[in-house]
Image (cartoon, rainbow, N blue to C red; front, top):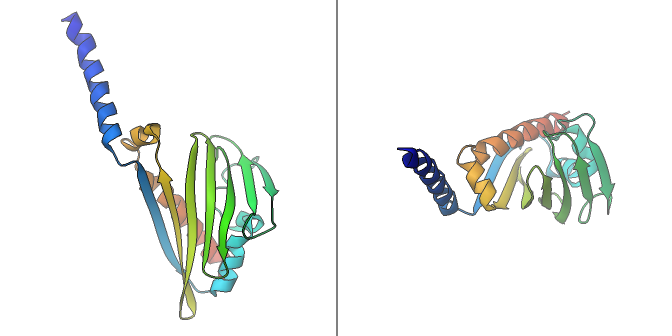
Length: 174
């Protein structure tokens, strides 16, 4: 009986780990919103990392330390932050900047979990408005796949993207 007390939990943990290992090693999150503003105006709000303070959903720590480096905007512009448990620590660098249509970022998360992601904004003209798509692609380490069993990463990150796009819309439509 005592043996079963130890064997059953070990087997359950083993099954959990095997299941996590069998999950996909990548994920994609994407949200879109139509904004009544020109692609040029919206592009400027995204391409200059200093302007993110007006709309980003990730300013969750008023004491967050922010450091800008590289170009002031466009390819090579970089932004590093360090804050409380709500924001962690990381940096984002623009790796591709195609005027009024697409901006690609290298996102390096350091805390709470190490990770390298590719984020992108795509802007598509739609008459007098612009369809803005914010996406994130990630190669998941084992620990993220394990956590993903209990937390829906699409809902978690997607909710932030929805809030950020709504904030961007409010700023761009002023």
